[in-house]
Length: 252
Image (tube, rainbow, N blue to C red; front, side, top):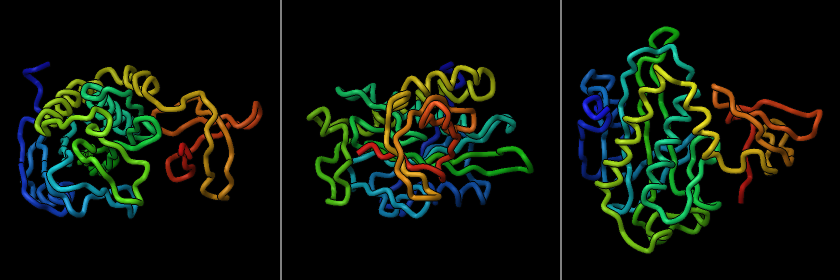
């Protein structure tokens, strides 16, 4: 495995930058980035979150990076990318954390009810198949305080009481990605069980908001399909499938 460990081997280390994901995207569109390259900065001032959200990170304190993946084949199920990214980040955090991290569906990572990491995946298509992926990852590492609107945030420093070397985070995260990405093409059946084992509130009652109606209901996530959609049981006769745009979990 080590001889094939190319993810994270090539590094682009930047000073202050708006977004590592925007930077990697520009390189890809100019055909100037190679498979496995990771773009890293200690000062990202316009980090991208899902939809119109921003990822806020204090300069020099946290891991902010984007990995570029050129797929060896593009006929895999796209939901498995969400699972692999979440597993890799969650395992990385658990390697360093004194307290257990879990995945909040689909790919945020929490310790308790507090968010410690976010992931944003952009896929690039060639016809009907995925050609490449840029995976933006933010991990709260050494930040000790957060803005008032981020009351449900934590960091490895808060959990452990000590600072960590950001290079060690990068090394471990790259190692995890190198373990999991080959399974995407060869042994994908191993991905889902590992994802579910790390999924917060799996098969437990949790409140969720139905986006279409605004209704808040209590239900159990009883399965996750290969699209990374959740199967939710509200009652014995009321079982539904949701994607990320259709339901919001309310864990706070």
